[in-house]
Image 1 (cartoon, rainbow, N blue to C red):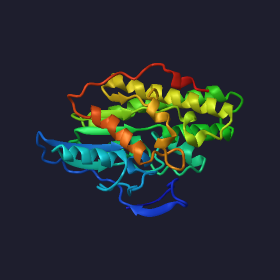
Image 2 (image 1 turned 30 degrees about the horizontal axis):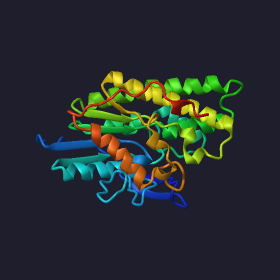
Image 3 (image 1 turned 30 degrees about the vertical axis):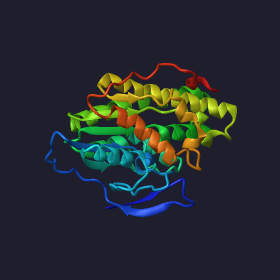
Image 4 (image 1 turned 90 degrees about the vertical axis):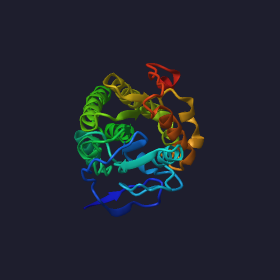
Length: 286
């Protein structure tokens, strides 16, 4: 057991509790109708911002996040679904990003590479990944704190390139751990256009845009490793204020339902997929 204090932005105060660290499960007996679903993520995987958020590492059948909605849809279609939800609010991609986040007091309790990927079920048939939101905000906060020195752009690009390499490492780890899994990864929308950034200066929005576009390009590159990448950067529906919770960052019920739509459409191995766009108007809003 380890004690985690999880900053749940949608609530008025941090929620602290004891959470069981995932352990390596025994492979289950699978059938042709079975889905073993492992979700890698942060607060998104727990549905933070929805009307029914979930405790980390729980199956949470009544949760309103996209993970829980996908399970319900698959079950309704006749699938036998085993869920392993590895998401923890505040999580970032890599150990180095976790160190940076905690230097800034952002409360990153875990990272995907060390604390989530090694626990993906070996019999997983579906793994979803949503990475980068906390990383982008960490980089942005570091720049505000002066980490970029006299050349903020160069420093930000260094962080972006490190993220690109770490995404490749994450996908390799998942494939090694669960070689039969279909890996579905969501890229980032332009975070500078989200409600939580509305009060930023134009320069701050331009920097956040640079970070989000750069991180999304790194996520898109995982398609070369066999991952299915969902293009949220160039999807106009991701820029409607109606899909966000009151904090302007986390999705609300409607937002998570949209996430579920996007993932559910490509989750089957027989589903058709498309390549994320290399450019679109949403990449240069500021």
